[in-house]
Image 1 (cartoon, rainbow, N blue to C red):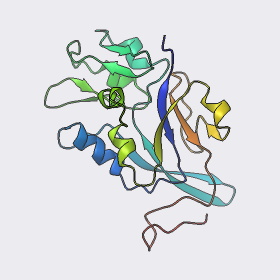
Image 2: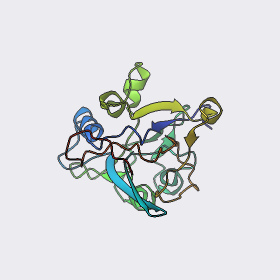
Image 3: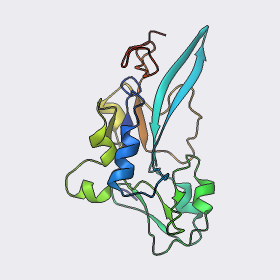
Length: 199
């Protein structure tokens, strides 16, 4: 059992959709061309007569009850003492069970090796006191790391899910969000770069 549970905190009110986090992760981890361990997508939902849009940056959620860990036939997954979910390449056969079972599509097959890779929260950087590539690169500080355990009591405006995002709680994803403030989403689809859309 993890004594703590590290995870991402995402602020949808800050994210520009610039995808700097994606490229920093890919470059820092020397990923093959076209392979990414993080995604940024625009979310859309209806609230009354309004259509609300915002950007969502996601990666492996280092779940408290990860399906990849539970279903891997080779037992290639493990959790660190701080809750980070890791996969051991030496045990991975590339069968793809984890890629099919993860509800967040976090594990991906590396075409160069045939083995599965996923976000490991830049564990080596963390152990040296540094932040993950995605967190360090975000120009608006929309991403940060927190200890999920008890985080809600310290920051009351944290939520487990954002509007418009599919509800998947069985794996207990280790990610929290700041409350979406309607009308304050910064979208790069504006005529002027960085305009604030009043929804």
